[in-house]
Image (cartoon, rainbow, N blue to C red; front, side):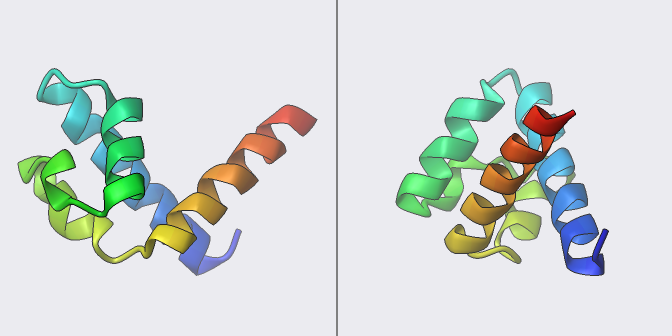
Length: 74
């Protein structure tokens, strides 16, 4: 696993947990962020809003699609 992918995985895991902890649906919130790039979809909790800004929308989509297909191979 490359360092960039590992870093992206940590960011997405943290963002997911921060959203879930706040009582929101992580899938909907992350999808909303990807579609609009509106940072208010991501809470400040656990530093998630700042962390997700380290990934571009293109990077996020690429990572999510790659992870989906990798999980289907198992």
